[in-house]
Amino acid sequence: MLKKLAFFVLAALLIVSRPAFASDPENTIYLDLKDGRVVIELLPNLAPKHVARIKELTRQGFYNGLVFHRVIEGFMAQTGDPTGTGTSGSGQKMAAEFSKEPFIRGVIGMARSSDPNSGDSQFFITTADSRFLDGQYTVWGRVTSGMEFVDRIAKGEPPANPDKIVKMTVAADAEGQSIAGSSPAGVATTTAPAPQLVPGTEGIQASDE
Image (spheres, helix red, strand yellow):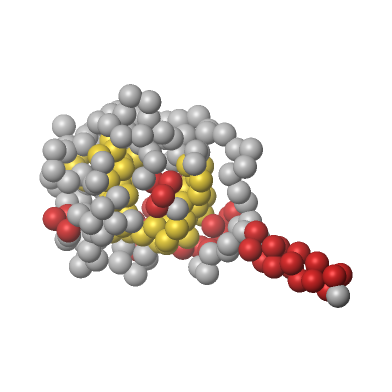
């Protein structure tokens, strides 16, 4: 009887402790932070070109090691600039793919300038409902787990000691991986001409300067 009980307890522990696998690995991103893993559901039905570009940059390792250069309490956390200053990007702008998807907590949008078609590599995660952004920024994903780790990202514009993306991976390329033993990679660089992306005073903006 004790052996049977021990077997069932062990089986239950294995089920609970095994890694969670994405239901659609090709459209799921693992965003590893110092405190844990954030799971992002990509939304190709809303923004197919943005999703394709985010996956392309992720697979290039572009986001690994990049800092969150603008983090506002009760609003959002912004990253995706290879220089960490909020003034750069990957060098490839994208046409807007605006939708009616509301900017509630955990939604991910693309930073841009006053030109709607200027999204590049910078993106932001809303940490609170921000409906004033609705229809003005491209929504390409939403956090499905790990928002508690996003909430712990160092605050500031910029933060005095900014947190980094430890690693960003498409789930299809990394099912079963964890961030244990991993360390931030070097900040990505680009030789392509980059748009001047800077944080705005309202929303998440970029300039064409």
